[in-house]
Image (tube, rainbow, N blue to C red; front, side, top):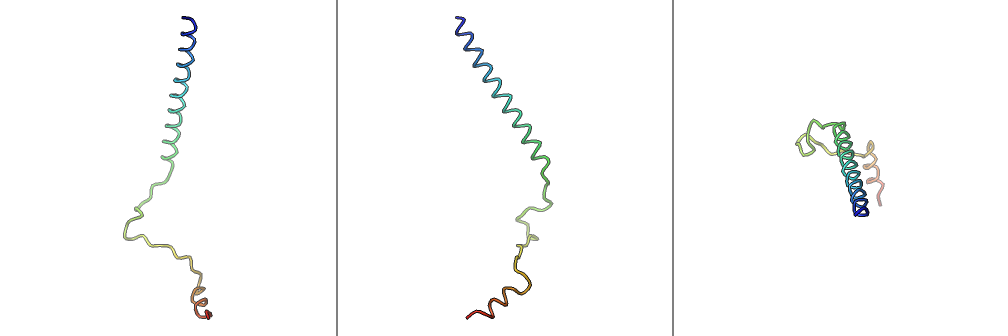
Length: 67
């Protein structure tokens, strides 16, 4: 009977440790996501424009020198 109670205490301690770690992770991630900025407009709004990474006339000069 004493061995059973010892095993029960180990299981209880492991379960309590797991629940405590889960709660700490939950609160930590919740706080992290609260710190993230909220965008004013969603990405699907009509005012959203794609970014262009072409330098000043660089693509036009490539086309004119092509064979």
